[in-house]
Length: 253
Image (cartoon, rainbow, N blue to C red):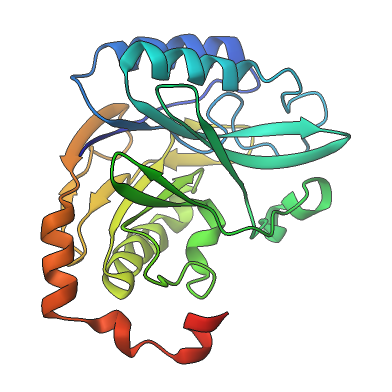
């Protein structure tokens, strides 16, 4: 399966402009099975979502249109208002319009995200074209127990707005999650600036050995691609069955 990650800037609180910008980037890319965007790709990372979060599903409708046009899945998170509550919601949209979503579980208390947003409690794994993807958002990366591989996924998607001041943590933990879970990692972080932070990217596709398969240059908008090979993954897991020795309480919870 061919995956393309888009490391992109985000115009603050302008969904239509960001959709148009990303559409231009997407249409310039070669054919792939999956395209992954950053966290809150339509607005920027908003901890005070009133007036910023979408309640009209415009970005979701845009994702469905692009997925159909590209005959590929698209993943990215959107600040979403639903029934008076706000969610940092990671959508995974397939070409036929099938939609799955994961609401961010670990809200970023350091920035006050937990004061306005409602956390999700469901672990979400999506199967698409034979690959099982676990969906995760930004701060989730720091909490390995919640994302521990129970033998139920082949790759994890992390979408983020991870600031430059902590970028080495992001890069290190992406590799750690790949190694400890014997899975592919697809990590997409934005570039540019918002009212509070600077972002340099550090996006990457990483294999189960912790090796980087593709990564754009820091501070630059760019798209890169790599292949997820299920045969290679399964052969590695069979030869070196680390997951069979995982702590039982983690496997069972």
